[in-house]
Image 1: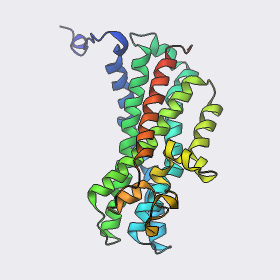
Image 2: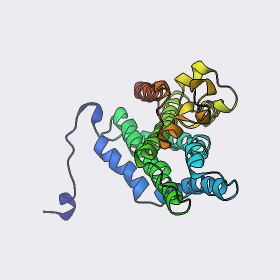
Image 3: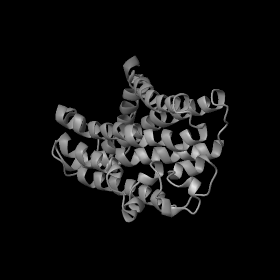
Length: 270
């Protein structure tokens, strides 16, 4: 038997999942068999750990305060941009280069094309932007700052950080199926990502992920020492969350954005 024939594995998946396994393997290879993953991890470490060290060494803030506020703020203000660019380029980059049209000429359904990108990029974002810098910051607090943060609470806060970034990843991917230019996609997503710096009405805070990482309005808690902390900060400090509404709303938005992207990708001309 020909050696090349042995390496060929037939895929008998039908329906909307046709071609998903092969596409996912290709997307994962683009992450983990290239320099992409460690370069992105180094960038995330630079911002997250850099902010932590600067606030600890120069600002003389406590590790608890830094981890529960400043570190989470970096995820919201800086790494959200990385999530937006990742979601935008995963769709528009291949559409504009013609790669998407070529790939979809193979036995690959459009929903499988989109799902493979969502899974691979979601995993890449989790490892490089949340897990690696999160573990390093925790280690810094333990070995340098002399503070051992509660593991469960810190892990929960990192989970909220990932949910926050996943919101912008799915938002950008959805917008990339609705618009053909990078300007509208990046502009709309960035406007939502940084909108908390300009205006924060209570009803909007309950619907968007801002409170996960950027602070809860003072009226939401009777304990003024916790005023201004994000929900992730409450978890790091071992406190009870004042509300679950932003968490539930953010998860629902991710589902909605994904659903709209799946609907729209069937109608996009490549």
